[in-house]
Amino acid sequence: MSYCLNPACANPENLVNTERCQTCGSKLLLRDRYRVIQALGQGGFGATFLAKDESLPGTPYSVIKQLRPVATSPHVMQMARDLFQREAKTLGKVGNHPQVPCLLDYFEANQEFYLVQEYISGSTLQQEVKRSGPFSEAGTKQFLSEVLPMLQYIHGQQVIHRDIKPANLIRRSQDKKLVLIDFGAVKDQVNPIRSGASEQTALTAYAIGTPGYAPPEQMAMRPVYASDIYALGITCLYLLTGRSPKDMDYDSTTGEVLWKEHVHISAHFAAVLSKMLEVSVRHRYQSAEDVLRALDLEPYMDSLSQSLVSQPSRSSRSVSSTASDMPSSIDTMPSLSPSARLAAAIRASKVHRASGGASSPLSPAAPTTRCQSGSLRPRTYQQPISTRRNAPTATATSSKNLVNQTGFVSTKLAVDEVIAAYAKGRRDFTSQDLSTLNLQRVDLSNGNFHQSKLHRVNLQGANLFNADFGRASLSQAILKNANLARAYLNHADLAGADLRGANLSYAHLSNTNLRGANLCGADLTGAKVSDEQLALARTNWATIHPNGKRGLW
Image (cartoon, rainbow, N blue to C red; front, side, top):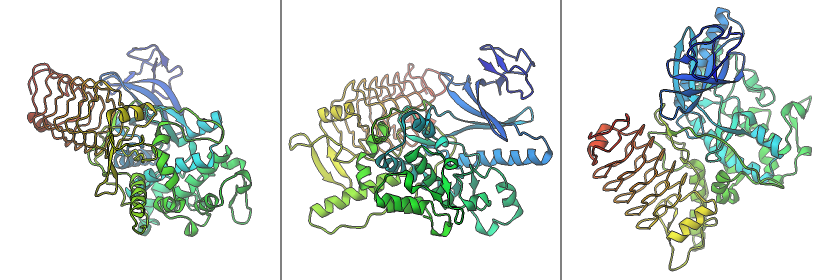
């Protein structure tokens, strides 16, 4: 179906591939590339549509937000424009994170404003709870262990989301990761000095978030980072009880939510939630890092990688999840996510204690580094590291464990261990040694091999779709006819690698070392790679370049 974007159109639904609306005559192909196929929703300032980008191979899905204010007075129109401009600016800042929708386009057409974002296909947490029931305490903690590092990154970009709630957290079907959507209510650039200025007032006098999830200071148009912590706490209550804030009682004197009688959780977790839900912002946790420390997530770090592949455990059932097939990537990234660093510190502490040393305090490392906006990124970036508890049992003949300088247990795995672990659902092989292994034609799609050693590994014909090889060593690796579509290879070393006939379509190859790599017959359609990089590699007439053309570079 082709859907007409004219707000005044009486019958916006048209047949597929129709050029103009049969009712109002409006052109249906927006900007000569986006064909709207379905209306997704409408709010006070705009409508959201599902569209296909007909200018790209495979016509991938995207989400289009159209400025459509309820009122058309100049004042309201200007506020709506401010919202859309601010949302575009914010998505450009935080949309580099793999759990935030990527901003794909931003433009004005026919005196209307449009944002084009990455389409996230999947179920919201609200839908999950309605379908499968409340989470257990363990499932809720695993939810926090995935969302808090993401929130730490967003706050590190000086952005407050202001509308965290179950309906804005989608579990992506492809990799089961949670994605935070709808940044239309964000307030970027926290600046207390200017908080009373007219410019700031104009930008915060509307889109204040969702009642019940937003804390008092946010409703008073004075949001701070801790405002998102409160909303996250209310979201946890929804996950634990299945009850929305409007269905809960409040203390008429303090305004506090009366929730404890509705949940059955440990005293420690109850204390953490209580501090997240403090009405007084002064007594609330001030940062995501503070909550991570207070939760003491050691038991959940061991199973976090598995929780990203299979749904967080519930009290009486396991639930399948859903989500997106859109590509994505970043240009620079930290070596590890905050949760991964915390897990690494935990393991390092265990190793230190086992060797007779004293334990050291645990603390997440510094916030992540911001990346350039607008690029596509892989789904496996920042997936936390699986620990030895989840890994196949090592033997003296097949595996050798070494503690490297970062505190990780660097493991030399055998072929059968890798295959068996993947078959059991494991996808995280971060910082491990797979050098020289013969893994021909194996399926390792969506695997996380970030910083792994794969020197001379034989992956001929392997399925490595959407895998993360960021900063991995793949020098002289055999990747002939391998499927590396949408793979993330930022800062990877592919010097001398055999990539003949490999599918590298839409792969992220920024800063990848391709010196001496054999790309004869490889398909690089839509790949993110520079001319300078390809000049260092070997190509021939059968090589398909990023622009879709064949021939020598």
